[in-house]
Amino acid sequence: MLIRECSGGVVFRGDEVFLLKNEKNEWVLPKGAIRSNELSVDAALRRVRAETGLKSLNVLSTAGETSYEFYSVTRQRPVYNKITWYLMSTDDREFNISSEDGFLGGGFYPIDKALELITYSQDRALVNVSYYKYKSLSKVIA
Image (cartoon, rainbow, N blue to C red; front, side, top):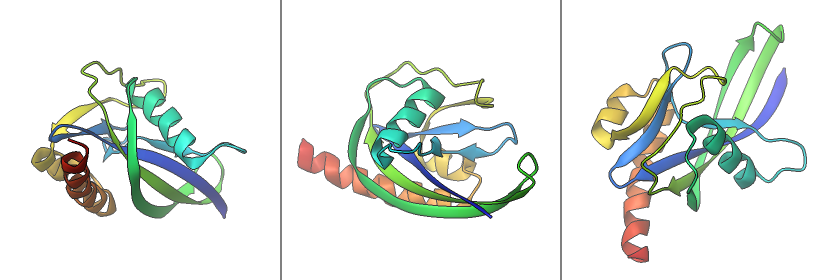
């Protein structure tokens, strides 16, 4: 089994969170593999910027960890992805979904709508918990 260390971002703008629609029509959060000698937080920022086109990102804290397994047809073996998530915020209005990474769409969605769209239950739970953390941190910062 191939074990991949990954990281990603749960990106909020006000009461909205950023979601991507992948080539399988799944609604997911931006994430990717950590390169050798790269810090997890740097990988998260790199992948969020690459997949969303968002430029101005603020890392507020860690958001948690998730993991999942799947069989990679291209690699011809099982893959285990372990993802460290970071709570991020942005004021950016402009974004550019990366079609090169296989994304069909995405953008900022109100929390209630996002929770309906998100494909995987662990991602829904992550967004739900992260939103409350984001709101409490926003009060402290303000």
